Image (cartoon, rainbow, N blue to C red; front, top):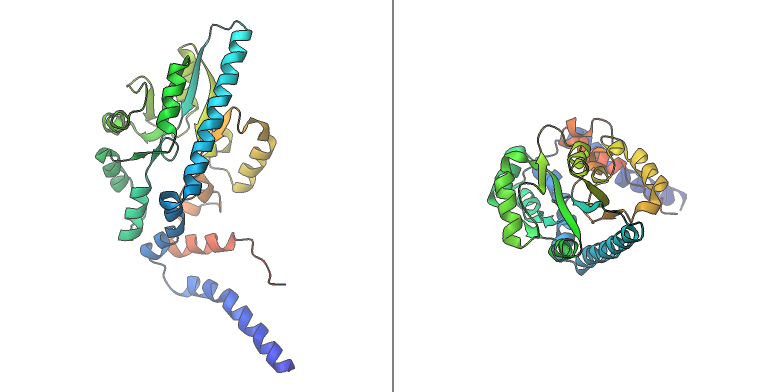
Length: 275
């Protein structure tokens, strides 16, 4: 009986660590790494829960904007109110590109992503178009501040207009030129006399430059310290497929090979010990 129990324990240990051995001894292909995202992309494309969270975010955002507008009126403020929104996975859905990556076993590349941007086929996030119209029709201005390449500004504007987003032009769409830090682009807006009352995004980097390239521990601590701003000044959209949080899993994460990234992803899991 004792030997049988020891055998069961030994089997459990081997099973628990087999993936670690495999990760070290066997190469992990790009297709295998991309396949780890299947369930996340399925959730975004197929679940009602994803849509519910998107609608919830924009419903809260409308109420928050109304609060800021009322506050400005009480203060007799003459400042123009602005709402800064991210684009990818905030206002528009690029899950078709993520699905293409999985089906073709391809990792992210600026070449294929650029081709996707130029295709102008991204879909609207549920509730996003209505939100943009609500802000622009209730005394505010929406600014679309994205880290899409400015090289594809024309195609991005085409995509947004085709979907029916409000107030889209080369003044309100601010794309990346030299840096992914959006602080300078937000300053362009405030320099034009606007007061930014709300930021909407799917990445903590969309709200505060202090967390850019930081570990997830630092990012979590930042959220804890600023928790009162979420659902008021900061509105977050769900995005389980990619983001700065992935790089926050380990220092130098994006420089790792496929096996290294897979190893880090597994090591980051906080698992039940079975007892």
